[in-house]
Length: 277
Ligand SMILES: Cc1cc2nc3c(=O)[nH]c(=O)nc-3n(C[C@H](O)[C@H](O)[C@H](O)COP(=O)(O)OP(=O)(O)OC[C@H]3O[C@@H](n4cnc5c(N)ncnc54)[C@H](O)[C@@H]3O)c2cc1C
Image 1 (tube, rainbow, N blue to C red):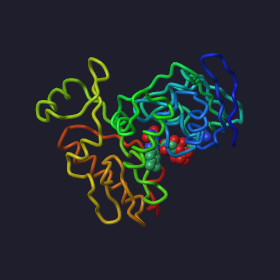
Image 2: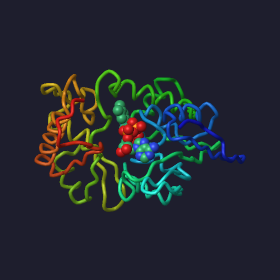
Image 3: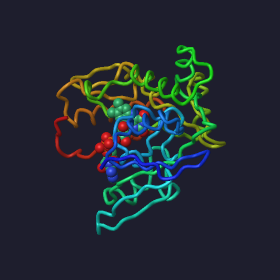
């Protein structure tokens, strides 16, 4: 299902509906070229538009749910049409209603996004965006510069799944209580973190995995990417079981060292059979 259409336009904003089968990054490019802001930090995330709301794709300080006005589609049980407002999608960190109550029973046919035509919210605080913009000699970035910076960082840090099999970030960044975080900070004064509120702190899973010595470690046909410890890689011919057992070993070492349970971000669709990947 293809197609991108302008549904509504004012001086400030546009409503854009994209069909589920469009490539996500083609949609981002389409919007950035027209100076419609909101999606630029999500540049180069692989996949389709229809999959984007499922786990509320996010990167570099932005999540797609922030721009979603409606998600439309079909209840696969009876073929009836449904439309969810952004609020009804119950977006959370790599989470939505489509991963819970509507899992496997709702087919998303289109996603409608509210984007800005001016007064763009330029987000440069997260990750290496600022340094990359500096290297590009860009002092007052527009959304096209943000897209260029994100693409450059992602190309440098993430393996291309067409060459090296991977599913992107394998684990979610864990959110821990402030008291556990205070204990960890005493032991590891340089622990990177992001304070969510008075009680909760997000810790980068990649840092925890790296501290356990996994970054760049190859074991048989699977391993941890040398540039990004959150990405597990298939070095060629590995089975699903080999990937899962590596993931479980990583979870065990992080739990033993830090007392933190790492949750998988990926969907495991078959853990019974040894699926050739
Ligand atoms: C190198 C790499 C980097 C990545 N970086 C990021 C990142 O920065 N941030 C991020 O959030 N994710 C990231 N990902 C994960 C991935 O890109 C997203 O999850 C993306 O949305 C998957 O799209 P897809 O079309 O391949 O969906 P699939 O993986 O095929 O499907 C994902 C889930 O959505 C369901 N689904 C798909 N389409 C529909 C539909 N139309 N209706 C109902 N259900 C549907 C599927 O059944 C499945 O459960 C990365 C992946 C890779 C390989």
